[in-house]
Image 1 (cartoon, rainbow, N blue to C red):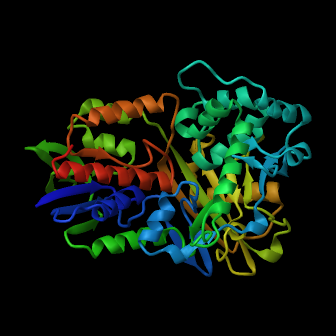
Image 2: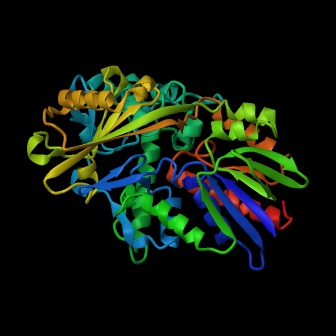
Image 3: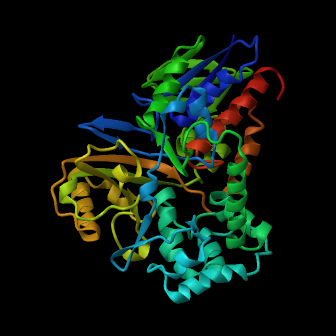
Length: 479
């Protein structure tokens, strides 16, 4: 019987293992062994429930426009657990000059699609508004090669749009720096809009019209209920992890092991030998490393030093989330939105804050509010090293200055994610193309996860499904 070893029990590893069983041809006979170095599965996905609060330590949602997460949830029986955002509070705020300003309605991923909300916005100056509108007339880029997101936004929408909209939104989501991020790798949609329509505004308006027409013409509407841009699960994202792990553990010839660290992968005959830390090894016909690129580099160093070296060129940053709760009566701010982002030029110590109890239902008791603040990233990586007391004190000072909250919290929880966020810097596509080509000389060796072809839960699932398909073909003798 053949064996596939999956190294890493985060969403990428679990989705890969699940997809291997889903796509398994009739009559196939192979064992799956999944190894997770920690004592729990899920990687950065971690949900905790305490005193009526539901706290997400890592990501709190996935994008519905990237369908792979929702489709996987449906296939494993979680269709009835989808939770959309609260439509009554769809606003996002941006801190500017010490005050919170509403991000103009119709701004989609920094691209304005409505004239009146932008014209009346207090966030952007009139020169800045006119410069954003000039996107309609700026010629598209003709030279090839990669471009930083910062250069791209300045070229199309201007400096103010970069500083007050693009940079804080990117920092809040990717913990990245627009001046080093590859626009092609991080936001390929922007490049496509420019190439196809010659303008981000024209291209986005056209896409929105097509999407609306598609929804209107879809028979039966949305069978899974209301779908918003950001979706989650009623009992938290760990329900996805727990359900995948439970379903896999109930399958024949499928073994999930926690607290087991893979030390190295080496060639062994026609296959591979996975050596475990602390002793022991596993022989495998195929190995899938679904760990961060820096961890994969360490595991594969003895097998292929050049591949290991290239993997280390994918940079990572560390982040932390601080969830903090207050009695509703003690918070004077209306919290009439999903939260706020903080531009770098404001010189603050948090990147963003989600008003969690407003964004999603059932995240806090009726008499309380739950706020989640983001710390670290490319802006302030050193802050992740603060101890819990120092970090909580810092976050309380920021919330006092920004939202006027003076009250004592009723709950606080700090989560640190060291070297957890891959950065798609300039040249990322070329680096990943080299890695993909190098893997061709190692039949049966594969990489999965957010370091390569897309960041986020949905892209990690998509990557795992694609890898599983290739492995099954290899096991059948069809490379």
